[in-house]
Image 1 (tube, one colour):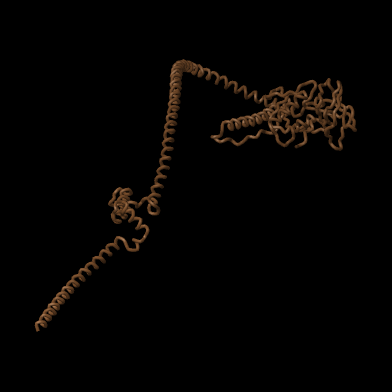
Image 2 (cartoon, rainbow, N blue to C red):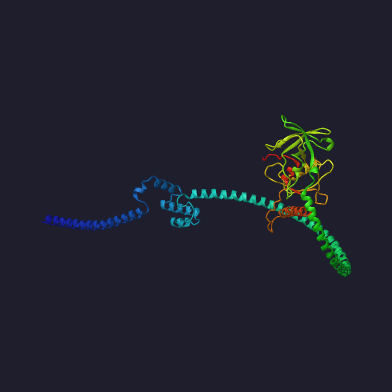
Length: 461
């Protein structure tokens, strides 16, 4: 019984102890489970926080491991501290403020050429290259500026030298001008004195002129009356002289010789005149049947001869000529007479030659060919004089000179001078013709001159 009670007590105590132990274990289990849950939550939170900093897959990358090694080597720093310090150092080197982040860096790099596409080092290298190029350009510009300054100084020196020389020249000219002014002033005073004396003399002369004019007007009235009487007498005498002039010279004075022999084979003739009668080689004659055939018509035109001849050899008392032209059906025969208006062994005929002539027969009459006519007349014994007078035998007129259109008011001086010269030639041509016709001097044109001299004109070119 006692034993059974002790056992029961022991079992009860054991049961109590087991209950207490179970309770304690339960309590501890509850406590430990709660703490385990707290640790689990803490671990999850730490894992989440750590994932915000670095993920598990990133920790296994070589770059992160290298960064971790560099952090430990830099004083056993954590990766975040190492990267924060590195970022601060980079920002301090780049922007100058270690607190700047990537956003501030991008904002500050806005507008920097090349920063949005390349690295900062390439941008810096490009800027360094540009800076070096700009420095080179600046150096060259500075060298050019110095050279330009030197050139400007040299130019200024040259200009100063020129200005000094110019000023010296001006001073010398001013001195000469002052001297000239003094001389001119002296001349002016002399001219004024002379003018005063001239005015006084002019006053006396005007008085004398008025008196002389009254006397001359009285004499002029008397002379005018006498002139009218003389003009009437002159008109009568001039009419008689014109009739005599148009009748021409006597035919025996126009005929200079005759044909004494004929050679039909060589077309040459013998003439009754030679060196004694002043015949020269090249002289031409017109051939007429007799002296009566040389009489001019009512208008003073001499008829053409039956032939023309040219002297080819000259003897003392005779000469030989070749036939240069001959009228068909009227051959040259012995006894025909020859005539040349310029030639006269006993007299030198005087000619006035003016106008434009076509001596070379190129259908272009010019004033220069007038010299050929004058040379021909002189070579045959005639004499050319410049103006008409009572001793002139013939007036030879070529074509009338052409008068160009009157030049404009602003025409050059040479053009005006040439117009005046030609105008005077036309006036002289007309005056010579009027004077010759009014005084009865025979007027010959170029063809009439050839007719009377027997010259065979050159063929037209």
